[in-house]
Image (cartoon, rainbow, N blue to C red; front, side, top):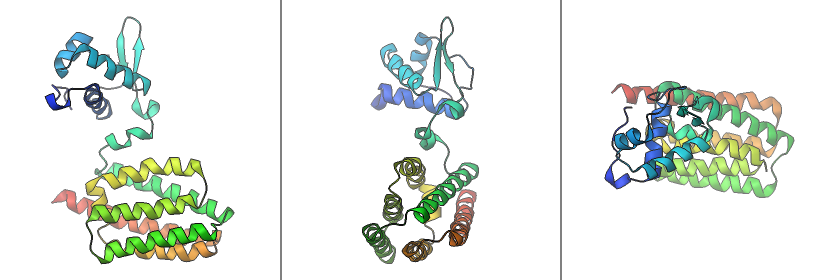
Length: 240
């Protein structure tokens, strides 16, 4: 992505930061590259130097840029310095990124289920999970828009994670599932056959009544099969 003037409607340090961040992530500004002088870069982006400085400070705080005396701002490797907050900036509908997002989601699902084996959910957590699945099924039955179904599915996931009482698992999973839900193409692929999502959650609900480690593999295989079909649908959409 070549850097260029920011829309007048977006002339703020946030918009400036977004433009530079995208350039770092898509490789237009590569690791080790020195940014142009402040005056020239501000002119390229069509912003004031004050606005640019605020954006550069924010990107430096996030580890995407480093200040070197006498050299100005140097682009850092975002894969080594960045965090999960950069996930929304990735091309989530590309086959490779979508595949990795779903793979990470499966690994986290495994960790969540392991935790539930060790600490089975109580009655309150089970009822919350069942209500969330019932609500999702109602949305599917009513043929609600995909965005609403995805939101309902996200509530099922949150109810499941709440049952683990693990802040670490929740904080690791949240950015992954949120970026998946916000990517229209990937979201449409995941919920192309929403009744299968409901069936999967119902099967998991039965397991939750008496969590057994030996049954984990079958549940994870079910999730992996669903992900494979979703990736096929995504690929078909991209090839149209």
